[in-house]
Length: 374
Image 1 (spheres, rainbow, N blue to C red):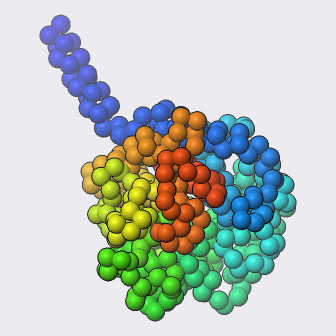
Image 2 (cartoon, helix red, strand yellow):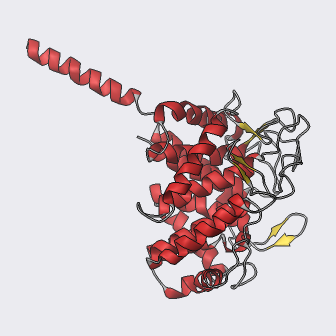
């Protein structure tokens, strides 16, 4: 009996330790993702309906492409038929093509290819990838490397190359992706858009030195840096171990993660301007969500130290779900489209941005990685 009690006490100690090590309640995270996603699907039941803001745009532009990235991440962990049908109907409506058709070099347009490839992998059919393959093969077989002249484009385009390289088992896609990424990193602007000393990226050539924020610091836009670190995480999640240049992406993700940890707000969010907290210094949802996604991916895949980064992730997700997520699923503090901290300001809990879709996509990407966290 004594041995039994000792064994039971040891068992309960182990169980208690195990539960204490689970940083997130997976069911709660899933519920929060579903809440936010249901709000959007109910608001936009017609997947082909055009988006009207300052002008009318088709629903396969980059903002909606980012949403469907998030939806497919949700579907991966919780494969409900309605999620698949919603994505499939969207792709069918647009004939599995892009805003300006094939042979288009704008990454904002072929961002939708990420979801097309995901849907193809679930149910292969050559017609689904006709436009995606035509576009990527054009990019692959032309010499230009300077297409991604703004850092948002890294997220819109890089994972498409990664997915196609895996699908076709063809390293040429990985090589082209790497050289385009490195051109943006090291050559756009005066000396590249990545400032390795600060561990952060200028949005484009308009914001590298001598451009400064009011406090004299360089201008590092939160969501722009979110696009980059999110793209690195997404690409690393796609390409196999041993893929050429993988170590470069790991290195850059680590450098960025360290820099971001140092500028997180006390409430868990990141400011729209990362190095000037007094210049549009309020909490911002899209950049914060992308940082959570990438940091959680880094921890889940042992790229980042869990003890160091888990508190950062926990604080950020708590902020997002208690201060930005409404009871009906709407996400507040979401910055409108643009290219710098001032866009769409001031932000607030209730303010509706010009597009709601991409912020939700970022939120779903973040939640999908937290759900996987052990």
